[in-house]
Length: 267
Image (tube, rainbow, N blue to C red; front, side):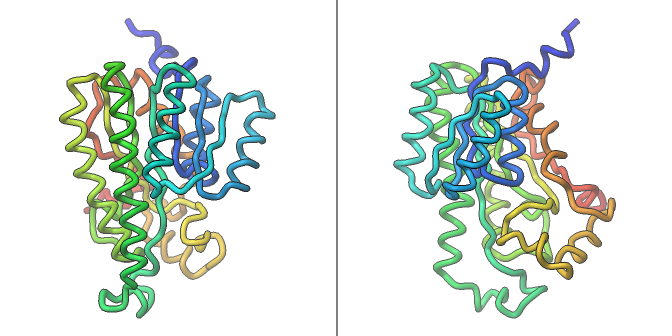
């Protein structure tokens, strides 16, 4: 019989987390470090990343900040390669970094399909989709050789259904991630590498400039769509993140898992 503590034991593991300076990415980095892993934390916000890494280091946790834009493919590959080379292994990679694509057409005329700026559309594709593809690609290069690993991708419930509250680019990229994860899972299963997606509902994070923290109207609209009638808190993602990065997920791959307070229950 398996020891329950061993199922979630990531002590001595090496993890890499993108978008780790705040919100869901920070929660992912925290739970891995709190559980004994060494965590390489990435974010484009150098000051916020340095502050959070210093806070975790002061608490005695093993973290290393690396600040860069995940849409820079060369920097992304170097950071992942350096993590594997420095620590001699790469056990879990969280492809979490993502950005808003502006308002939904339900909330603002600026969200209408004929008014979406093409430069914003391209930027969202670069960060929310291409960087995720490349994160999986660069992680797979090491995990295939190891014949082990966990890749966890942050999609969204907006990738599972039409979502009234977010813009076109966000919906499109988060939906694409779902099939990207499934496709990668079927290839990498042969190498004992598990690839899964987390699909958060409305969480209280800094995305879109932290509008859910600053805009009471938008927050109320999001809370109304959640059966639990509240937003999720980043720490409520920690259990699922640890599950998918740990030995407990040894027979879970290609899974698309909502964590949304019941938003998708009736869809």
